[in-house]
Amino acid sequence: MGKIIFLCMLFSAVVFAGNISIEDKQQVQQKCLQCHNQEQIPNALIYRRYLKKYSTQEAMRTVILKYLKDPKQENSIMPHPFFSKFSMKEVSDLDDEDLKKNIQTFLDTFDLKKKLVLPE
Image (cartoon, rainbow, N blue to C red; front, side, top):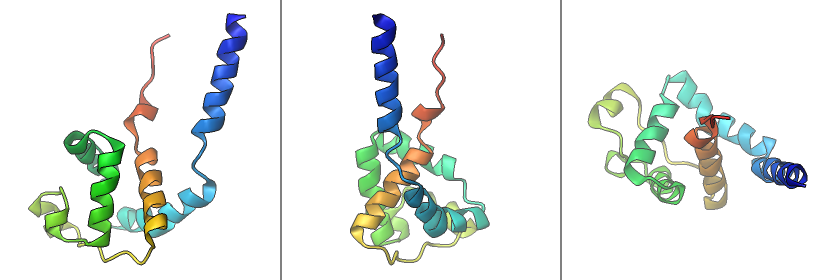
């Protein structure tokens, strides 16, 4: 009986964990990560910096959205030397809904919880 309940819970977790569509991932790759990769911007490092400062995905979403709508150094948590090495981002042409979806996909892509392995 316990195995059946465990399998049902595992199945439901897998079904609900895949809530990021392939189109969302492709849009983030096309609109965001393509430039990040060309400029060799350390995405995982940026994610960890945001996580360390804001600690929740909700707080991170809010400040990242603010930065993407008004990309200035004052709206970023990155230090000044970062902007001397990497170019300043241009204002995004996406609407708020797409920006929020892309931010969530970015955060899910680099989420540290998904990289944790629990001991058996």
